[in-house]
Image (spheres, rainbow, N blue to C red):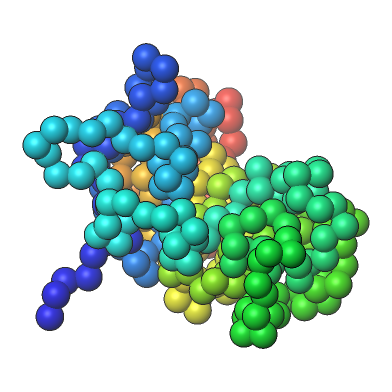
Amino acid sequence: MAQEHPLISLRQATLVRGDRPVLQDLEFDIRSGEHIAIVGPNGSGKSSFIRLITRQDYPLARPGASPAMLILGQERWDVFQLRSHLGIVSADLHNAFTNGQGFRRSSGLAAVLSGFFSSLSLFDHLKVTGPMRQRAREALALVDAEHLADKPMDVMSTGEARRVLIARALAPDPSALLLDEPTTGLDLAARHRFLQTLSKLAGVGKTLILVTHHLEEIIPEIERVILLKDGRVFMDGHKDEALRSGPVSRLFGMPIQVRRHGGRFSAVSGMEP
């Protein structure tokens, strides 16, 4: 039987912006079913990594070499087709829906349905089918947000809107979710509920790729951590090895004490590791 392709495969992937490399020689695989965190300080290349994976930017071509990046074994993707395999949740997307780029009075259900079309709104030319509506409502139910179907996005709390955006990413039934700093703007209670939702999704078989600089966002289901620094892989391994005071202090360039509470982590700065 043919071997299953990795979800994402990077081979000496380098991304240049202007005349400066922002990612340099990234080389690792992420397999379907694997839950992984990409951790790094501001300026480490996390946002550039996301733009690479979402096909907003492309790695340098290397004549005669194998492709620098493959998604499910394929080098080129139609971005709309890609969204059916890789759902995206980010603070930037949240802002797009609540700060006027989409229709501010768009309901939760309409926002979820827009995920089928990779749009910020539903337009007359977009054909919403009955099965799409059913899957959208199922996605809202999966994240305990059925009661938000008719609520306008611009009057939702940050936590409510973030759950709707998870449902939007889930509605096309992707095999993986890419989560970019997903708890930005959430208060403590909303963050707790959000992380519980991520654990629930991990339990139903969705691959989770979490991109963050907050160790508190790393749920127990995540086992592998890649530390990213200055556009390069600083460390790639099990979280018990990567999330220690020494490596994290070197990653952020300051003394940091990493603490573990059961299956979760936290970090305190200004202390000797």
